[in-house]
Image 1 (cartoon, rainbow, N blue to C red):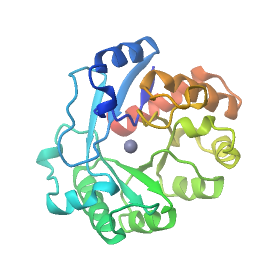
Image 2: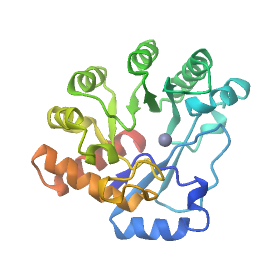
Image 3: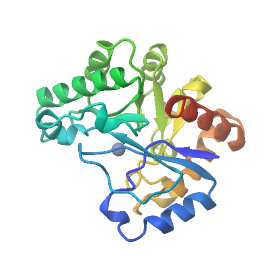
Image 4: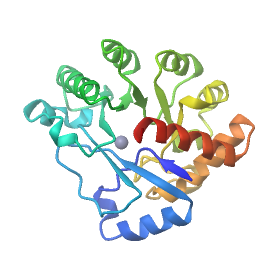
Length: 243
Ligand SMILES: [Zn+2]
């Protein structure tokens, strides 16, 4: 039972192959895949009991949200809001527009009593400052790639971290240290497919079945079994997204 909490199955690189990707995911032991949206429009997905949806707007596309924000009614069948966040790494969208879209999505998440999925690049301090304005908000910092000090600042606030391919890359020693010390009830697994493939698949299109490599690496880092990590992270995902 593995839950991929961040997978862009609607990405065009999966066109014509979504059914086989899902079959391989089932064979790999996945029981849930959460698909966040990049733009406010609804992602087109095959109907499958394993698929769950989040709706929101990626910081790269934040101007689309400020033009046409979604309402609670639009998000009724969602398990989370997002993917929102802030991206200050060569992003074409102005920080002010990104902040406006983020604030609006934080409000929506609170109103709907749902968690928010956050993308963060070169923007950790700003993102924390924005989310701190919404004290009851529960956030998932997806593709978390920072050290234990930053991880701790999220855990103190009750937020979660999403662990994906980056935990398998040799350079990320500080991240692995953060994982060793993380409380088990704050960890989620993800692939961020079709991006960020794990080390043994670098250069390839990522897909949910590759999450097994992330799972095994997290278990190794924490000095425990994949079975235990699988149980803990799936329990976390179910508590957070399917209460
Ligand atoms: Zn994403």
